[in-house]
Image 1: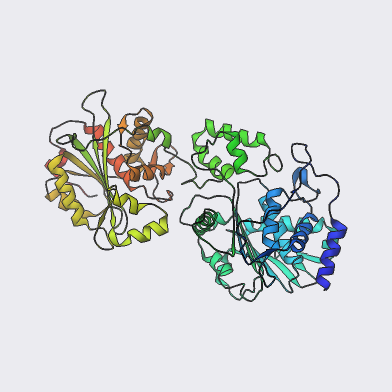
Image 2: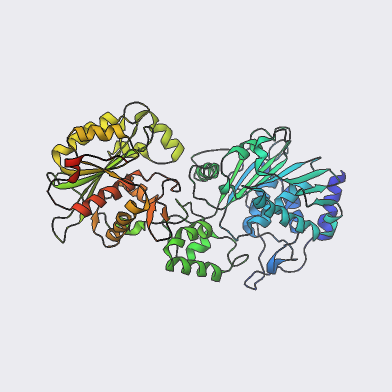
Amino acid sequence: MRTLEISSALIRTEGPSGPFFTSEGNAMKPMKTYKPTPFMAKDSTYDKDKADRAVQFIQSLRHTKGVWAGKPFLLLPWQEQIIRGLFGIVKADGYRQFNTAYIEIPKKNGKSELAAAVALLLTCGDFEERAEVYGCAADRQQASIVFEVAADMVRMCPSLNRRVKILAATKRIVYLPTNSFYQVLSAEAYSKHGFNIHGVVFDELHTQPNRKLFDVMTKGSGDARAQPLFFLITTAGTDQHSICYEQHQKAKDIIEGRKHDKTFYPVIYGSEEDDDWTDAKTWKKANPSLGHTITLEKVKAACDSARQNPGEENVFRQLRLNQWVKQAVRWMPMEKWDLCNFPVDAEELKGRVCYGGLDLSSTTDITAFVLVFPPREKDEKFMILPWFWIPEDSLGLRVRRDHVPYDVWERTGYIRTTEGNVVHYGFIEAFIGELGKRYNIREIAFDRWGAVQMVQNLEGMGYTVVPFGQGFKDMSPPTKELMKLVLGRGIAHGGHPTLRWMMDNIFIRTDPAGNIKPDKQKSTEKIDGAVATIMALDRAIRCGNDLRESVYENRGILFI
């Protein structure tokens, strides 16, 4: 077979020789013995010859950047494990068992180089006539990163360079002996059909704005090929409703034995959320290339910077430890929030002055109502009592879609449901009416753009309702006060898990003057309870235990 002869010649003429040194100055140790992945099916076998050819092809290439430029691409053990598993494990018919690989790993571990090498292997070394291999990312610029690495690898390999045509303008690499190509796709590629895919390399899958491109490239486009490969490689992201997080969960479920898919190859390198993110042991656990492509000093420097600048902590966790974080900047230090886990006895609070915050959201979303009880004496704390409602009919869907334990919270009483597929506002009005018989609710703050009818109904029930703006002017003072109280352990929230989850979800927007406010659009999860708490806290701080008549009781509400 002509292709096999060419590939074998490439391997023989361009194979590495001599030791390969790490960034620490030590010779890198090759993999001693390959142990087949535990995800190999019972009826599959490990074909060492096929695995060797794939490894030898990649190791015939050379690194392209920095101190590595020009040095042979000797695979690190974790990389070789992946390549041997993907290309060496075959079914009874001789074709590859795995057609999808999900590789999740922190930055600077050689991710782009490995992706480029796999793209070239699929294009030039997989013995596929007229193979179509595509490089995809969130945008053309991102996809071009892997392409440029692949193009430089070709230029540095004389045997391969003689057989390959690089079309830089169109971001295409053509392997002439088989008329196969590697092509970077534009962001509008999801609108195009008719692909006959042999391979797809998705770089930084977590940056995909939606699932359109992913679905077009992976759903049926490779059916005409005997062994297509979808190579998904990424760092952890922040959006837990994305296609990447969907694949992350699938990979995690397979790794932990909850799901089985013989065609899916899962690899996740990272640390657990409760691991000490400042510990070097945690860094080594998450970064398999530490000491090779990335130095310990670089990670330590990034950690030290995050220690001094709390806004960088989540960035460090995401990019260096491969943790899925809620947003790019963590506002609420949850370890401090948890220290305010003082008991809150609803019975002992009967008759106490309190202030409500009402965040209605939409009829199909979470509705939050929070009461804040101001301290009566200097050594007392602000006490928080929250309630949440979601539509009963959407409970199961939400659990599956959002990967949030709403069902557990519902069974344990931390969240309530209303009948049907929308939140029943009448039920909530009646519930607040009952609360008014137990507690001295002085005012209820609400988003002025919320449900006007419900607000009027509450006023008709005798409550003082106060419109509360969601801009910087109104939200900044109580948001800052909330942080002060948390840091000073001046509040008690009883460890309510739903409220904790929402506090952890907060993304903060800052204006040029230094004012802050929670940003619902950028917060990747629900923050309704946090917003309701901030509004109620504002009224509790302003009015305290003052029992005088409210101005709103005299003039009513002004809607502007």
